[in-house]
Image (cartoon, rainbow, N blue to C red):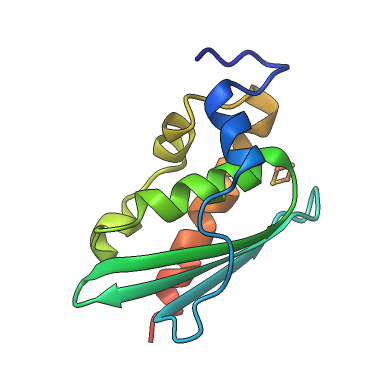
Length: 124
Ligand code: FES
């Protein structure tokens, strides 16, 4: 499952081929959006809470393979977590959940992390 600086590993490729939880949540409790101004990639994250924990998460992405994989993984990672736990989620943890990203693609995980924070700020 190694990642070098020129290739995506199998975990990343699987997320790219079949991204998890694509779509919107109509009655979301938190919606976060984010753009990377350098590449123009855009993402949205929708969070539904039950009490203090995330019960559902969906995402939309217009961007590279790495951000597609990162957001796909984020929609799994956030389930069952509290808002406080999500605030502590790091881009390194997102990268690790993918088994690593090529060095020049690590900013994609940073965008995913930013969108999680934005969704919490937008929590109703
Ligand atoms: Fe911009 Fe991936 S290349 S988020």
